[in-house]
Length: 485
Image (cartoon, rainbow, N blue to C red; front, side, top):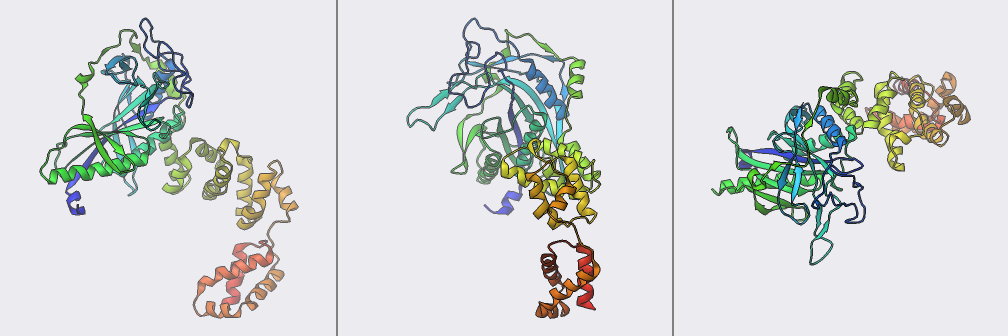
């Protein structure tokens, strides 16, 4: 299909994200929520729905729901009740799922996306509701049978439903990235899609550009990575446009994504709400959310990514890219924010955090909380370089690895021990500059003929000759004077 044809149609996407909460016990009983336990070992008569058992609500689920709702600028509902969503499947032993139907905990919210073209997209949040998870069907471990692991039954979820505000597969990817970052900041979910901590269903339709009416919606389920969500949406966009171009009707249905074939395939016709025969959960009383509860949760809310991004760009003067990298992980962002209270060199602090610090953390597979040097130590090193006590080369190549090996030593002691520090001895530096230029007469002629980029070559040779113990600005100025004099 030509790109011109696709341009005639607008993609419309809404996402439903299931956030698996990291509570110690399940939503309505005390069964463990441990990931990776032996199949069918984290069960009880309550999670299996045996006759005569009664659920009991886990209050941590409510607090996590309020926290996410506030972070997504939602209204928090005062009166909440649970409902039974009835359907029959092998991984749902009770024959129903406890969820919220008519009274979602949070509603009418939004988050902002900073798009790659520099614009912002406001994505409306229709609702966030509490519910329990079903078990897991495993299709790839037995050649003949589907295996069922019920450990996940009853694990608490928050389902986040957006308005149909996304207009590209890439925007959907960015939205999922933002949700993952947000739940990690709030520390209510690890955000790992591959382990099922985040699961996403996409509602996809297309319409002629310039029209307001939405097209027929198709839901794509069972996607376990953000990249798969993006690919599924891209495929559905093209498939639906091709159907319309042929004059065919788009069927409202539920589909799944085949990552190997890179296409979607039909699972079943789309269910309507009445197919589930919702009715109020008779074994759980309604929950009232008081203003005092909301205020308490809000007072404990950590700094959010959007707030930190704004601060890093407007107050510290960082680029949007640098701010985004630093804010990707909560504890790294907070570590950096403490660092810049100790040094006025914000850009250099960002470069050190994103460069040598993150490299060490990645190499050792550790988190910033386990980094051996303090923010005070790094600030002193940054200041030493900026004040000309050390060259950047000396700091990175010599002092940095030595300090990481002996983090209790002082900066002054290490500089002395390693015989570092810059030289500003004019006469001896001038002699070394002349020696460097005399050793490369042909390059000197090329420089004087117009190849000014060779200055870097001369600087490199001079740094080698001095062992890096020279102020770059002074050396550069002296080289230019000799070359152009």
